[in-house]
Image 1: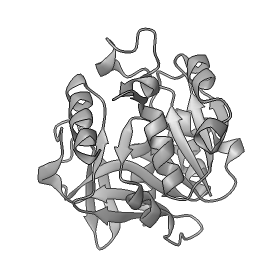
Image 2: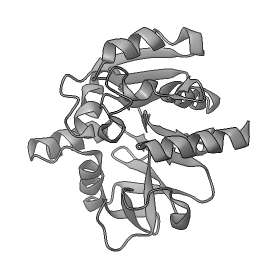
Image 3: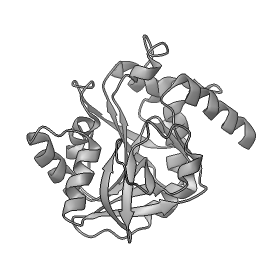
Image 4: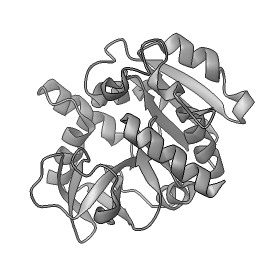
Length: 237
């Protein structure tokens, strides 16, 4: 199995950090965000990784290389439209992913045990699974979080502005190759985000949830969350 990591965007809410540095290379206690994620992927037993680059992608490639320094193998896909919604970036990796794969964000730290559990799920041919956090009260930035409505293990709706929800999108997916077909259809209609694709799958009853509680993960998207991430990592180390 391969892991796909989206690392194309600039990170508008961290723009003071990203004028000369791509967001995935922002250091947390001296280690770039994306390297922390890659090491978690490796601890979960996945050693083949596809990284989608965009904004200042040449710097990201120069840092990561072929992955050997981190004990993994890295391939790259480029997204020249890196400012577009994240579904565009995922679709750029289609030629490199022929089997089921895990999909991760380059700015979401997570407990490697969560990924280990997620990748063990059996997928139907057209299914995808989203890791959903049920510990809503512990979410660092609930206002910006993508909300999810889950019922009996199936995702019914997803979006940042849902009024009724019982979980939070962690940005961790287990996908079948069918996910690319769904993305192609939604993008043709002008709906280009991952949430749009999940919503389309949900309508077909093909979007399942892997629910977690009290497992660490964090979307590092603001200076405040960057500081919180450093605090949390210090508490582990």
